[in-house]
Length: 354
Length: 192
Image 1 (cartoon, helix red, strand yellow):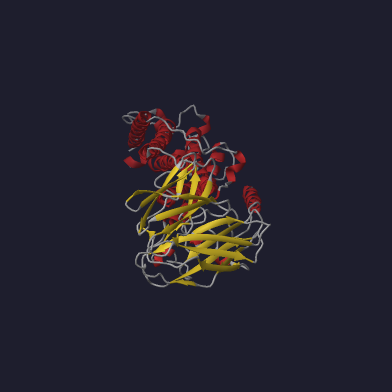
Image 2: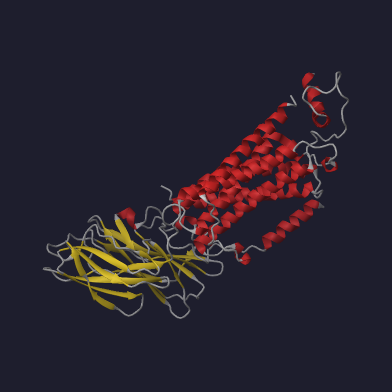
């Protein structure tokens, strides 16, 4: 009868679970290979082909060690506002070792001000075309094939799609080309409520104009100030709420004018400033405290008392299920024994001395 | 080479599965402590399976914690939610260790009376509950949604005690563990 009840309860609990292979809430931006480590879609074998049309394009000429933007376009599919759409920028279609860094490219910034190859965008019922872009740079001159992969789903089905290849071959940088320094890496995040001084390292630049804007907002143009040997700076005003600003610079010098790709900087809540050692120690102390508490309770409770009526019948294995007290041995209780212990463990003592 | 994020998925699934199994077993033992589900066979299965599952889950826990820290954005424990995850998982690990040691040291007599049974089964249930709670916070962190959203709990608040109190608690806890372990050993050696 008990078994029937247990099985019934389990069946009822299982009936409340949903069957699906997708994570409709997404998994957050990150650096993921095409199959997402099994995390984006619960089971890749359930994937169906996405009807979305995918296209990748290069925004300008790619030079060795200089940033360049790649723009992704997704069209031909309607999402709802509750849908998350995952977009991957990858360099292989085998499902592993396909991150841009595996091909010698570094993601400098992504759509959301991070530096991930995978970004999630929110669907909208008002549009059927979505764009995302990444800014990257290469440390070698080898041609690289880039692909855009998409993960999305409906109520129960995960969908997967991949674009055709976009081949990019970086070129040697021409002499006197006004450009960013090869080791320059822009700030991609800042805390809320802080003015931000943006520093830009360049080569062969004599004048710089910066254009910045909130994403999809109106542009603001400022002249950057020279603050050192090929070091330029400009100010970004404080952000009052989490937001992403994108900026680019027009570089002027002896060579032809150059416009950098759009870089993004995300304003976010301040990162938690806390002593890591204290966190770890407090965690260990909490674990030890609970362990000590339970063992102390066991130390106190585990020997049954004669007056504890509840002890009878709780023994599960038949090993000590007799509450009948054995007759005391000749000479009385063994040394150090109590009557309670004799009652429960006397039979073991007698077996031992046999 | 497997990434930290993927390894974290694997290890957390091992931890969650094991602790969920252990939770069911300790729930049965807890019910038996209150004279429900009196089957002796069920009792033995729950005892063995529960302790094996919690032991296996405990083995996987350090890997889950380390890979979780490695795969989280930034360096170390960088958000209040991750700090709370750390506290909960270590609390669960402490409870699980005490459950396993008690079972190892006392044997089946850990179920010999009501108070001891309640202590053991509720410690096992607590370990399972806290570990599942921790796993649920992982969903909150990565997907901003969790099964526990219905309770509207705030995980942006951290209960951080002063450093010196942490040290005192740690010393007292370690002393309590040593005394309890010695006490259990002494009591057991009396039998032989």
